[in-house]
Length: 473
Image 1 (cartoon, rainbow, N blue to C red):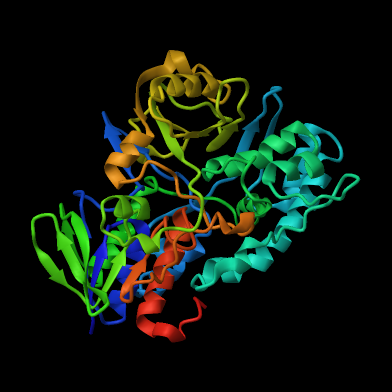
Image 2 (image 1 turned 90 degrees about the horizontal axis):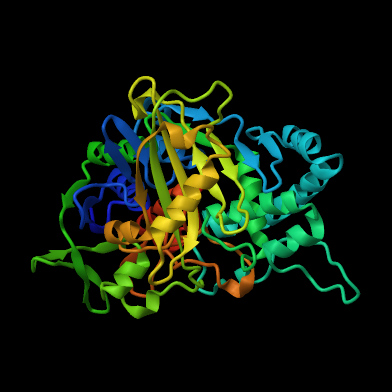
């Protein structure tokens, strides 16, 4: 039985902790704040409740596997999962609207043809076929296996983009895919919205970001009753059932070494904790900035520098009968693309009222006027929420500065992507320092709830099986 110290109580860190505890190790999680969940936060006020991080779950199989492997009680006995259908309503700059069904290729093609004109659905369907090729080429090595010591293979672009023009130059960015293969500005905006929601700029994201709409439209989107915080609570409780110990209010200031390997951690109060393995589950940029991690674990990817702005709206009166769970209001002029979440969940609001969450990703620049951005988001969201201004009881704005204070990093970590010369790869799970492992959204395979859960599985496999571990099954 090994002693394992885990830094941070985010979803990826807790996923690793639960799996390691089941394997017979003694696991202690050290969290600098007073709660668990990391970026999966919650705001409560006057009977209203809001997710301040992710609001929907993709690839729930990741957490089903976690709960099966760590106990007899499956995920669905711990949380209630509901497919979101339609998956999303899109409101484009010209006023066109389209509802896309959940996990239905044929339904999506038909909906796009009906809303955007004959041929639009076929172009989108052909694009998804090429996106599937990129997914098939990268799914196993990029998501289910530890990042190799030489990740140069991921620098090559896996998306089989169409070539165009006299010189037959290849397509290298997501924006170029839209321009060359989709053509309709509304389809281009639809494609770009998937990149934006993950913190990527379509103009710089590699063509392989095509896997993002493919994943959602193939595997679907799911809502956790009570909000996504309920999932974090379920994972936390599973850890406690497996006898993982949590120490809150414990800031880690160093990874201690002995004989060239990680041998424990040091806390801000001077406490030294010995450990046979250390799992760093807190944001890698924060741990590097504070000198907790050595410089040679720095991620290879280029930080996009985008943070999440969240506006929590408490609205008077119930939502209208034809309201949908998620609406994407596409950007126009100086208004950003805004995702509007309107869960019909009585656990989140007083009877007869509505809790609405607006989110947008924005570049994090010094001196940014977040209140002005929030005002534009709210004005833009009126296209999705009739009578929003008249119904508003109060609002609270969450900015990247809040994310920085609570998690240690202001930016949104995107999922790992191939292509782009390897600039979109997070830090490897197996660090250059023996005995030190990295989990969570800033580690392989990157950000997002599903990817964070995968990182926990990979780290647990590396510790339990050692160098023989070749990936999750």
